[in-house]
Image 1: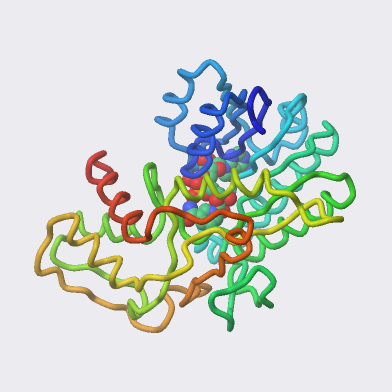
Image 2: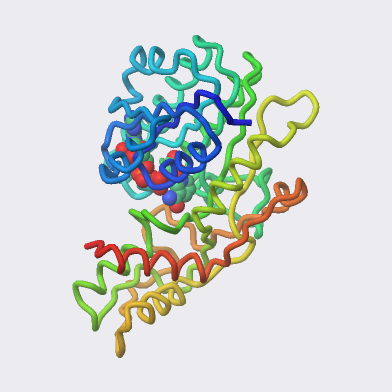
Amino acid sequence: MFENKAVVVTGAAGFIASHVVDELLSKGSQIIAIDNMRTGQPKIVQEHKKHKNYKFVKEDLLHRDKIISLCKGADFIFHLAANADIRGGIKDTQIDLEQNVIATHNVLEAMRINDIKGLVFSSSAAVYGTQKTFPTPEDAPKVQTSLYGASKLAAESLIEAYSEYYGTQSSIYRFVSVVGERYPHGVVIDFYRKLRKDPKNLEILGDGKQKKSFMYIKDCVAGMMFGASAAKPAGQSSQVFNLGQNYTIEITKVADMIVEEMNLTNVKYHYTGGSVGWVGDQPIVHLSTKKIEALGWSPKTKIEDGIRKTIRYLIDNGVA
Ligand SMILES: NC(=O)c1ccc[n+]([C@@H]2O[C@H](COP(=O)([O-])OP(=O)(O)OC[C@H]3O[C@@H](n4cnc5c(N)ncnc54)[C@H](O)[C@@H]3O)[C@@H](O)[C@H]2O)c1
């Protein structure tokens, strides 16, 4: 599907999109990688630049006209750039609106103006907000608990409407937490960093009983690739999939694994208390993955293995 195609990847210097780039290069795509380097990793860009089919452009998706011109001639877009920091919206109430909604609108305008018909979009389990149904299916009713979740849902709605108007074939993925090589943010690196600073004490936000699901990066990319080529139901030009493992793990268990992999002993856990880690956190993230499974795809790597690989990556690469 992507062989010899010109594919724009937004957020290409980031964690997940960089693995999308790896996969697309292996499939023979010509990549136009866009990133403003706000949280992008320069090392990844340097590595990818060695490939003849990779072109990197440092640009901000908020610069609409530049993005329209950069996307000219593209066949497909993987739109993964975003503010990926869920908690960031509490202090900065503009960031999710700008980086996740306006930026997505600019990408959609670039697609409309350049007649680009294929889109993959990275949404999030955060859109489920306060939830009563577990595992949570794609069509579960939801009440938003974070500006990040709200902005992702707004972006999804824009994509659906543009797809309806202009016949864009879009697939939207609501990820659980993604872990693996190049992992830059989230609970695993937070615990790892705290333990590097103080190997005897670990502060855990909440009561540690939060139940979360995680997905290994290679599964995340494989799931998106699979869903992008899956036939849409008759009369639909966009579809939404949950993507993740179909079970959860308690946050204290995540801490135990990190302590073990770091070869630490006698670590005392200090819980800040309460059922959630912060305002807007979801105490349980457990998505139903039946929809994509019914089409023939499921993740290969168990949560525990994905987390252990991530910690070993952080240790082996001396991540500070
Ligand atoms: N990592 C996860 O666990 C997770 C879970 C659910 C959803 N997601 C979504 O997946 C996508 C990728 O997340 P990630 O973890 O790789 O985050 P990341 O921060 O590593 O990557 C995002 C990239 O986008 C770039 N970017 C941000 N705003 C930009 C802009 N205006 N113009 C150009 N580039 C911009 C950043 O510099 C960064 O390189 C995001 O959409 C995120 O919301 C991630």
